[in-house]
Image 1 (cartoon, rainbow, N blue to C red):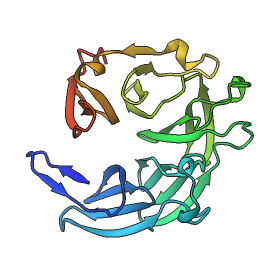
Image 2 (tube, one colour):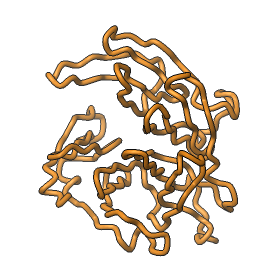
Image 3 (cartoon, rainbow, N blue to C red):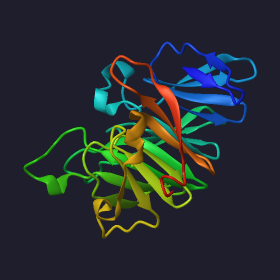
Image 4 (cartoon, helix red, strand yellow):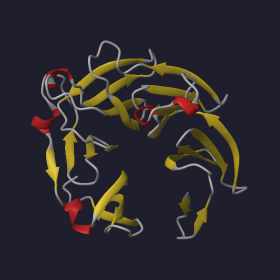
Length: 248
């Protein structure tokens, strides 16, 4: 995993696992790998801990669709999108797993938690299906879940996404949802449970101009940051867009 500092310097860390996501917590980097939460002390520049992402089943028995994919943070709580296992919560103070939120309870077709978005105390989780069910498409849920961290329950379900959503990002009242980099949908809050997301989404085509966007899209006040894969067998490279050109 590479960490790019504000001065452009790059620090590489060998996690011995495939890195999938990361965020900053105080002076630590919290990295999500294929099977672990890994803590890195930025001041010391070394790995300080490795923790399980779930306690439901042994790591060796996890199916690909049950793997952890992304993390978000509200206060001292780490939220992990854990595929069809649902959402797991990890206390960053005690370094203990807290809860599992079952996203598939009462659902006839299993959904897969793909990504996590947090802002202040609000949490949204992106859900897609790892399987297609063309005979009964009305039973498939693809969309966003709003999570209540106080009750540890799903507060609302917003359905109607196309298949293949891979990541989501949130800034102010705008949500961007990436379908493998192309296309990218733009949603404006507030959402409603009575209107399919596809009916209120706008297609943002500018992301296709610099290559194939991969991973998270990140916001600041002026730019949207992305990582692009220009072509096959080429390394990923950072890219950024003026928010004004994307009308965000």
